[in-house]
Image 1 (cartoon, rainbow, N blue to C red):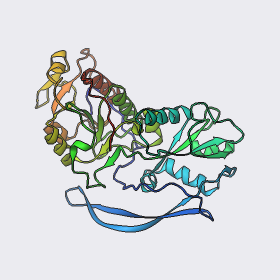
Image 2 (image 1 turned 90 degrees about the vertical axis):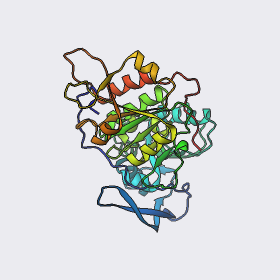
Image 3 (image 1 turned 135 degrees about the horizontal axis):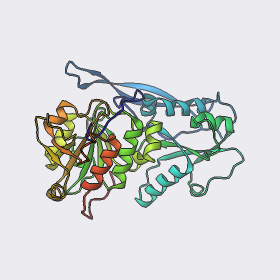
Image 4 (image 1 turned 90 degrees about the horizontal axis):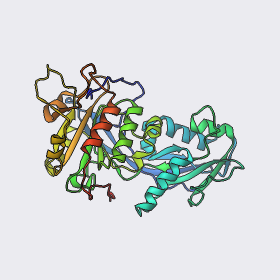
Length: 362
């Protein structure tokens, strides 16, 4: 969105159109690989640009077993983990993500403990050889892999490993739903575990992983109930997005879909759809100013807030289906960065209802 923002497009974006499949836990099966057969959906775009499922194909994925000690960067498990960090399609096909740093690992572990959620998100911990397990994650009962500093550098993707005390191999959480792949989830009310007045952030082509991660972190901080990602957004499990979000994709329901899915959700919960936009005189539609009166009028109403891309702003579809709202600013300012503007919108428009907190997604 250009909602009050001078946005920078990024060439580092990754598509969410890749299908993914959650695989079972690694099992130390000799000699070097764990083999799993899965059903994968293959897609192609039709003439209107939407994605169709053509068929399901049984394929076999091979995943390296988890060793106890690794000193070589050529180890198959190391190569597997590096691919998970670098490739969106590889992440979704295997259903795993690398998370770097004990603080993030601890926060996510504590979140699931607090929610009494028993899904096994952390698959294994990767630690420096001869080092103590960092406090806060030392009680996590999963496999542990000890590696040399050279291997830790390769896995983390950073030049200095002095601040990298742990890496976790994490399952993509069940709170992430790709409607372009899983077309059985037709009950809109289950997507976000909706309360009576949900607040849903809608991202329309947000390509920069830093901006996307910051928006996800703000949505979590201001008690929004979930995020809907339209086509063109970068992968929320991209390593830069994960760092910027402080692990929010593991703690916040995220749904990837298209405008048809969003319209179905809007109609089902009777939500108002508003989109951030600069207050310009050449806009065909009226642009509301963000004010206390507007906030009060939305207090008891389900709300979807649309933020557009850094480069081109709101899509034409977003303009058509949304009421436009702008942040009042000094006259010599035309725009704000999308992450900054989004944070302001989400803070001001957050629900005051005590029930409007994140709920468990079954």
